[in-house]
Image (cartoon, rainbow, N blue to C red; front, top):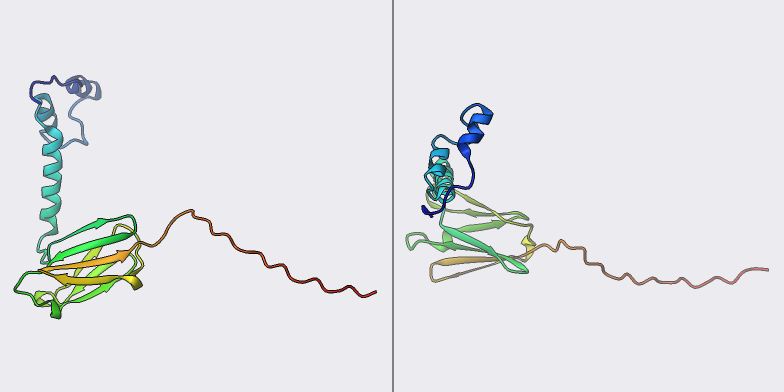
Length: 156
């Protein structure tokens, strides 16, 4: 990466605008001039800042992914926590876990609306897996049969 020349002349842009670009973080342009992997370092810095701002997150580790028809959330439950003490609540866009240590709760935002009435949860080998069918949001058209009412005879 360091072998590739920088294709954009940031110095000329700075001079044209009259100084440091206000929307870029301090030191960002120097990294770009040096040919460092600036995208990787920028993303890492943003993620670190975001995760540090959450602070005090006592929730359980989880991962979520989607299939064509479901949203699946896998929650790692440590051995020190009894699954029987947990309570799982689900809404159209949120999964909530109650009964965590110190009486805390954990909310997990879902990527799309789900049919929470049809959600299923299974605990196996330290992992609580919650499967929720996606709410169908499509332009699918269903034919509606037309019932033709019988004609009344006309009076003469």
